[in-house]
Image 1 (cartoon, rainbow, N blue to C red):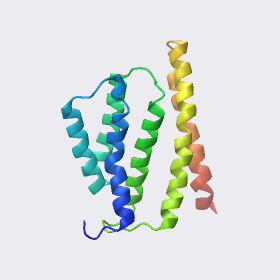
Image 2 (cartoon, rainbow, N blue to C red):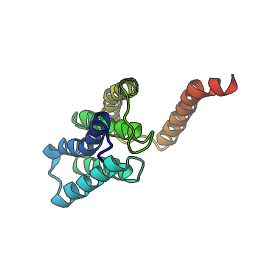
Image 3 (tube, rainbow, N blue to C red):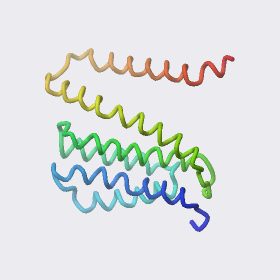
Image 4 (spheres, rainbow, N blue to C red):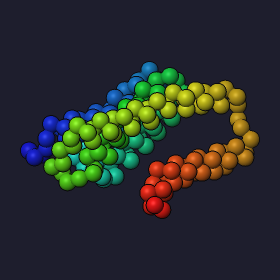
Length: 169
């Protein structure tokens, strides 16, 4: 821990604080019991210390699970909660790039900051579409398989555009 530089400490702080802040945004829907906060705190610190480990998944799924249980709808507070979880995830991703004493430079932090802002910008339209779909009622059975195929195709296309041309050429 003594070998961590200032940028590493900043990123680890974001990883440790992000999930708890996202869970705190769900307080108007109902306060989580103390054990939920305790498990989340332990997992968040674990994730900050070992960003490549399984604690990140536990944090993200735990917060999303609590939101789904406490608030079955899509209140506007899920947008900043999603942004907080995204910040924690991207910070852990940057930390996971190298050895424990990695000190990310300004260029790396700016690059991943821009990428995170781009992704965070998609939270509002996704929330708006989700709200419209919830208000429309239960969809027919074919909607979700079609949505999965479209998302997978979009992901494959994005991966090809980003990486495929470099592999071929």
